Length: 180
Ligand SMILES: [Zn+2]
Image (tube, rainbow, N blue to C red; front, side):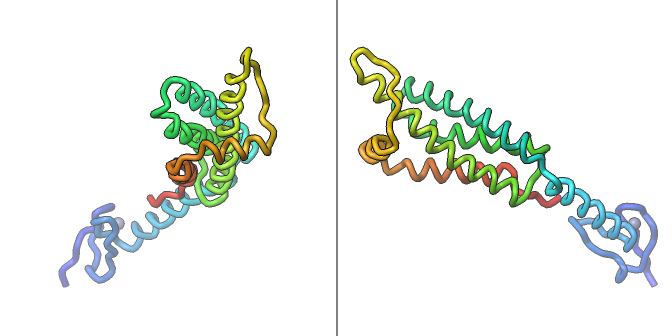
């Protein structure tokens, strides 16, 4: 009978006992070892996230994103819509890094929920600053929730939900579980 070599360890095995994985022909022992390594890699990325530091760093980078979005909106109207994505991206990377580089549905849910909250915070900050600037002399004027909803409705542009969706997508995409 013709024996073939295991790509990994070079041992000679009967062809019907080998397993193909990513283009490699593996003996049963090497295949079991590979499965174990993959399981460990998956556990390492999904196991025990640090929720407090994830939320804390997500909050800080989200705030940084809001500041960046305000600066961008002041700089040019053309990019102000796009700037809405900044807080979500900040939250996504903050949560991911703060969790201890964990991945999976729980970290994704935290990032998406915080990204949605920061989208609203960002809109509130933009409309509050716009209202404050219209006062004579300009001074900080905090919008009431009702005024905010009205300002949002008055200034609504169809691309807003698209950028909002892009932000949530980034928040879900950054800490997604990956196959190794
Ligand atoms: Zn082998």
